[in-house]
Image (tube, rainbow, N blue to C red; front, side):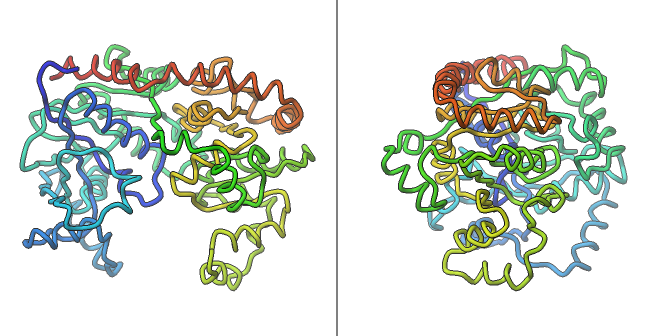
Length: 453
């Protein structure tokens, strides 16, 4: 525990996204670990919406979500903020009094002692960085003792140490898999490498990339790895209840399907997963959970997803149960594969626990949180033998070359047929996951904070 209580600010940049991301999970876990170290946690959001003078309306506005704004006025506001330059953006505290029912947000809210919001601060700061190539400053009613940004954002809090977590360099290592402006991205990374008090990353692989590609000195980077925390009420749900839940949603048996979950984007290698699965000719179905992202149509081509008419899509939305309706339609394309755009966290945990094996042969990962989540939940893992994944899984997963479709096919066939291997990987996976316990992560995090508090 820390000797004296300090206030640490984290950003709500990814926490504010409705469907969340791996970085949102990282930020949420970080908030609880900071609290576990005995510090106060402040969270800065950049939600759109004017600050209200009335305290109740202020609270309502934060949880209500953004109000539609005409595109012309949105562009005008962005241009005005960019021309302002990297001046100080002001944040105001969001009152959380309990007058608003917020249980619907509990799965994605971080731990916090204070919430702040600055109107579209992250979008505005990115626009200003494009023009001025400098970091924007954010001022808060109560200055924190340290700011820990969970993503490479062109913002800082003046007169306090600013630490940035840089998870990976995918836009530079696999430029064809992202839509980032690579020149601007590299400029921001180099600027953060020089101006941040310290850089945190999540694997030795990412640390090497930051040294070799961005030129950040090794002594300015600390690899803390990550941890994963899953509430006991989800981890320890009785198996019979779990089986009913999984069968009710998918129609498949408990431990009777392969599972992928994550954003459907090129680096996740969905196209090869589907191709390898179809080539395996196994009877065990495949479930894919994830929202379509950039180039998703190409990745999902083998499912004939693009063949669905707009009328079909509208009828899915109007159906009594859109998830089940969409699943029924997609089975028409490939009867053994179903896809869900989204699963709430509690259902996702049940789906992971209920899977025969998790398939995660990403082309590149800064850490690979889904592999750790699967091991923690006693589900065997098929994953890549590249980037950070060998660090994370050790000898507790079936690793393959992610570019070799035949190797992925063979992995699927092998795990489908070999119950002893699945049991062995499950046992080794639980041991490997324990290395990334919250306690170990908290200790690594504390060693970084102690240098600056």
